Amino acid sequence: MSGSSVYRRARTVVAAAAALAAAAVGVWTGVGEGSAHAAGAVPSPDHVVVVVFENHAYSQVIGSSSAPYINSLKAGGANLSQSYAETHPSQPNYFALFSGSTQGITDDSCYTPGFSSAPNLASEQIAAGRSWASYNETLPTQGSTTCSSGKYARKHNPWFGFSNVPTSSAKTFAQFPTDYSTLPQLSFVVPNLCSDMHDCSVSSGDTWLKNNLGAYATWAKTHNSLLVVTFDEDNRLSGNRIPTVFYGQPVTPGADSATTYNHYDLLRTLEDTQGLTTHAGNAAAAKDITGIWAS
Image (cartoon, rainbow, N blue to C red; front, side, top):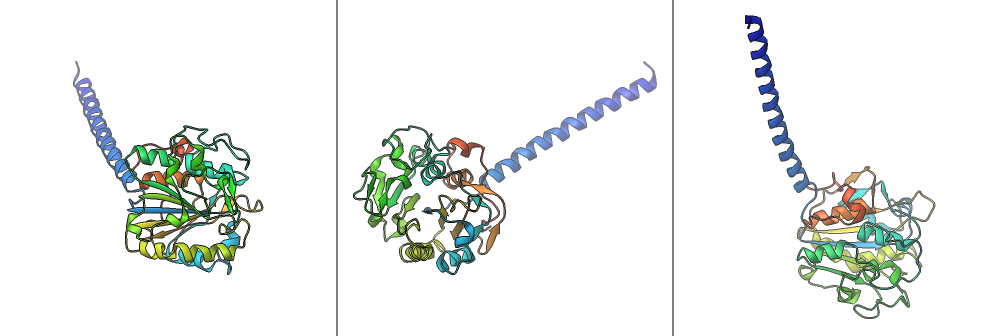
């Protein structure tokens, strides 16, 4: 073999070894960065309370003089300026937010309780040994599966559609604790048809939120906890763009994200705040809400 051949072969071997080493470092770095990002993309609050209001577009609430309290939460918390619902009318959106799928629901009609066994936020939380509850204003009694009662409407309460969620975990709003440290790690609050702005004004819903969850919001600021305020859908006039505000100690005050998010992204984010290793339905392909969290 000539000297030049030996040189070329040696150079090839060295180059290959260098490339392999670089690839190994790259793979290791990539895994490390990916794991750190996945673990740190969202916080791990001690308590998360999600409140869902009804049928108002972003511009009807954010910046509106009719919603001073929600706007104060925005100012002291984080605002998603490009948050979107999935569809119309109300009920499919609630199922989407809760389970990552509309579960074949296309209208607001009364479904058969426990008709689905699909994974959902509550079933995942329970399977992981974590605590869950919903607090439903004007629900006649804890666990009642009635379709409607006065200003109560089950169409806004998707947990009753799942056989893997105990009906007993659906509580009345009167059962919402005054000692917030006893709250479940994750819970939903659903106001009734007046308090949620469906039948009554934006102002009435804003006042209800302040009067009923304002003290929790203040507490959350100093107790590693989170309040999420969102809407099921818009007024059908704004491309389904809805208000979504985060408030609490894990949130950077005054943060404003213009990233486009939807109900599936919010569901995934809620799952990840709980450290869940599964993601229901379309949440599996969704993205975490980022850029609003305190370091």
